[in-house]
Picture 1 (spheres, rainbow, N blue to C red):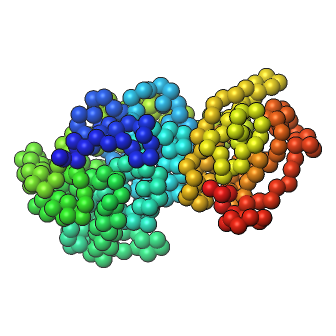
Picture 2: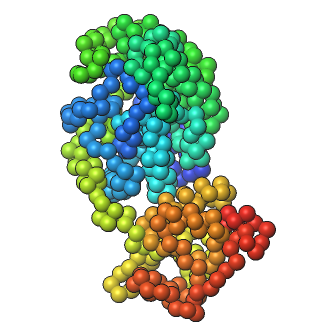
Picture 3: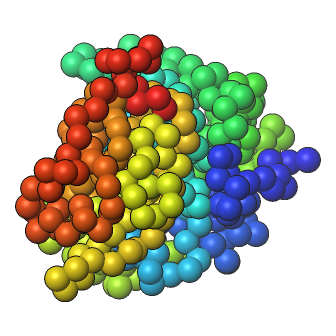
Length: 436
């Protein structure tokens, strides 16, 4: 059975859309399911001679183009609004405008926010592979379902003509040395991804006179390394780039290259060569409504953001008392201010137990609209992790309503509710991880 025929649920999220809901990986999904790219990764660690990220035209659709760059919380706010307007979004991807793993903090924080706020969505990433290996474990933990790596040649001499430079940390390499390092990291990333359950697509930009005779060999090699799908992408000669005057591949060249690759891997042949801020069905183009929403999100300030911290979460067993230890809570009751009082909003699930400090980072992301969390007990490590994200942790006992009234007014708790607890790891045999 081919990869495109495999239907399975997003691991760890049984209610999520099927893997085959990804419109780029399954042609049957492209007319039904939409994708959205969140442009949170402006920097790049490889300079490709065909790429120009300086230009944005709303009628232009090619990788590297975006109208705005968003911070992780702006991207989360933009996605929240999009999910209210559309019911067909199945996939959230990060594809630039630079390389996601050249911007790992912004990329991973965005994925954490999306996973916490919209756990049913598929997560997708597109990278050149240079800095990918060190993040594979975290991507797997976040249940990333699809990943694309662009590999344009297996020959460092050819790579030296395709790439102007490769930056590895503070080290900049040019020529064959840079191309060889990039290839080494790309193949290592494929090996690291093997067995993770992440579906891997390899893109190759078809460049006349450079790699047009190498595409079948690339497909054979990446299949051997564990790739599931191959996409031969014809070059778009972009103005103001070293390859601006190269001819675009003609249909015969594209057909030959794809036929050679198809002998080794299933092909994606419906690629739209999407922008870094693409939104909607693959055939929709760039809608003005999406661009307006993007620009509005980019203009948000922390105080104006929809995710401003106005709620309070409570660890409670029955919804009446503050009686849940942070590490034992399976969910949190979330309350919002209303008039001179407050109202119950929802029960919000906690991340599953285990995972150490990453669990508390996920919880912080899931409660990023809360200014405080009320608990009956908390360990020092989860407290520090939550409070470093801007979430106040309040240890208390008693009725929930007696605590919410002063906390929503930013007043102190009644003295009778305040207790000093032995933190997990201080008076027990634990490790300070919050018993989680």
